[in-house]
Image (cartoon, rainbow, N blue to C red; front, side):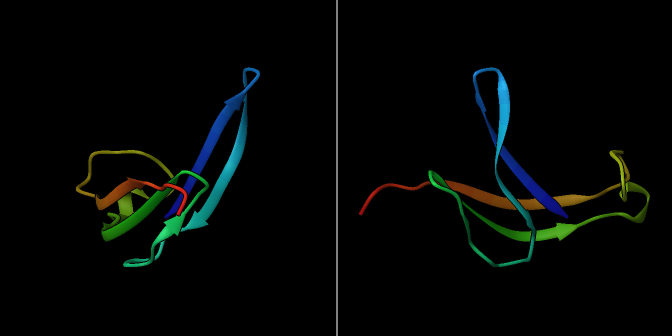
Length: 66
């Protein structure tokens, strides 16, 4: 599974982050941090959306300057 984060600048999306997700690895962008505890993708959901029982559990936190 790949996560893509973008920000609009002047009406155009600007990509900030594109990564393949790995369990229990913290990903950081300039303002956000992400951590995923569970990623289960049903084979019928590969390469598309659907309601076949896929499950993604994770969290997002705001980062601040230290």
